[in-house]
Amino acid sequence: MTPDIADKLAAIGRVIDPAKTGAIYAPLHDTEPYAGVAVTRDISYGPAERHLLDVFLAEDASGPRPVLVFVHGGGFTGGNKATPGSPFYDNVPLWAARNGLVGVNMTYRLAPQHPWPAGPEDVGAALRWVADNIANHGGDPSKVVLFGHSAGATHAGTYAAMPQFHGPDGIGIAGLILTSGIYDLTDFPVNDGYRSYIGSDVSLYAARSPIGGLSTLAVPSMVVCAELDPPPFIPQFERLLAAMAEAPGGKPKTLVLPKHSHLSLGYAIGTDDTALTGPVLDFVRGLP
Image (cartoon, rainbow, N blue to C red; front, side, top):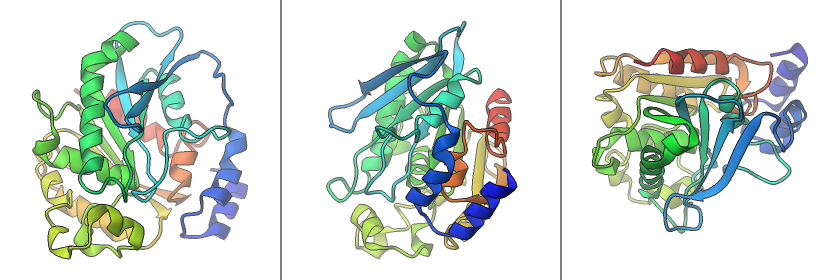
């Protein structure tokens, strides 16, 4: 991270501000069409209007490649895999395609129309599409890494933690990456948007939290937060690491991104800032 970007992020502070953070990073990204990368848009993985995903593959790719499936955030009520005129979140699968992977970018149903468990249900449906079809797009279905951010990390973590969302062949992923998510709903300040997804009955929050199931995760994992994450996210990171200390898939690889914020860690993917992408690439390449 350059000093000028660090100063701008510090001035925004420990808040989630898409407009100000996006203004810093958007000029650093390519615009479509993306040189050397083929993009297949809006593939349907289920019956709902938002059951859509995009696949990014280098035009010179040869042989099956590991697959990175990205699940965006948005507070359970918003967000999308791509927005016209914005590089976010094309930047994630584009980076993946340019670094020896197949990038898959999915979107999912939103609250309040679609409350819990719509998120992990949709992650599961997308992963089943990947298992059945990604070989036709240059991907290796035995090396799928699920990567969620913010609410997307909660959805990805819930999917991985709860076998009822898995397909007939099991979890369907070789690795899990969670960045700045909510993992214990019993210990997080719940606003109206979050409540519209997880419900108003607090007695259900423990059962709907992924932290318990993640303690038994049998695949390798990586857990990330940002130095400038809003304060409630830091204890979530610490609590998850403690819960997963003896997970069968191994203690998670951990990373606290210095000077980064809740949004900048994702918006920086594909730029010269490799504070996150370097470790992610090492994690994917190191999977058995």
